[in-house]
Length: 258
Length: 274
Image (cartoon, chains in turn blue, cyan):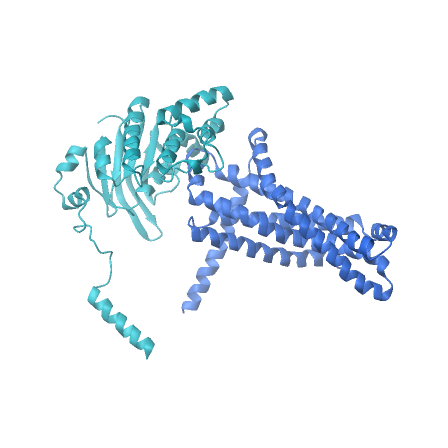
């Protein structure tokens, strides 16, 4: 009997949570922005969410590109196919690893920070005091953070893939001796803008939407206590990572199967 | 009695299944300092949030200058909130801004005044609370008392008609307590405000309030001027005002009989052990 009770309670809690998250997003975004006030807020958040994530994205991207080149070379060279190293690395990064790993890193770096910041604003009554000052916290706090996430992650993903390819060049061409001209020209002929690059960008936009939405909602909806904030921060990282990985499978299935 | 600014009529408020207020009515006269007192945990802060429209009552009306707060549209509520302000217990200063920017915040949000005029307004508010020298400090650099004074300066930035004080004396040393007591009274009289002070600090409240409501057990158990309150004979009011540990408000939180529980606990432990 108790199991049924718990099942029912958890189901209702989940559904009402989804409802609250949708309402939060709609009320934060359904208004005409005031560029004079909104733009400086957006710039601040682009710095906090995007620029501050640059280091982790660039360092990880470089190393992942280097590892891919190293592993790819040792396999391809056995078939005398090391000329395909360029497209192998580029396609893996642009189609899959770039969007997914950048999204996972973004969830850990920026998503958790967003949740913790908004949660702390709630716990210290800053959100309440905004409301009492007749300033809508959804527009003032949530909206700029949401848009900053939506803009930052696709750009970070592009940088991740680009530095990954450079890292692969460093290992494959400069160290292992693959011909530089072949590396770039085969990559150019094999990578298709619409099929590969555009699909990669679409993936990163979807991931940006999911991660930022989860992050701002978890912060706004958390229990205003230290325990509540820590739970919400963990939930942001765990849930966005799971969503990113499962959505990636669905998107890949839609985009790349014939 | 003078004109009424906030009028609460037959208001009932529940949190989940727990009744916080059961059909209470009270009115807050314009230009006066009205205090709401009562033991911790009975929802005094909740009352302020109800007046500010952050919570909605189960039934009843909350009129602010004739407007029924719970029934206002979102836009109308935000317009009405421009005429009131609230001093939160924590101060709730924005931690990413300096004291100056915190106080300029509501002015910048709601007016299109030029920056040099805003600066003059902010300096006047800071002078009123004695913190002009702290304009460039961050909220994290302020002591608890200073943070509350800075928050007070922010809450009077747009010259509201009503200020709601949430536990303004809690956790203050005697000096900053004295400062805040003086500020509440002098701001109220100098700016012609209406103040609602929620507190359980009996001597401070008795010192500044014009009218006092004492709330306990979901109801108003006593009301009157400080002199009338001091003379009330109701045991509940007497217990609160004199700070007695036991009385009509019991020392023990509601629980099963002590003896029964001890026996039951033992039985449970035995069962677990065996």
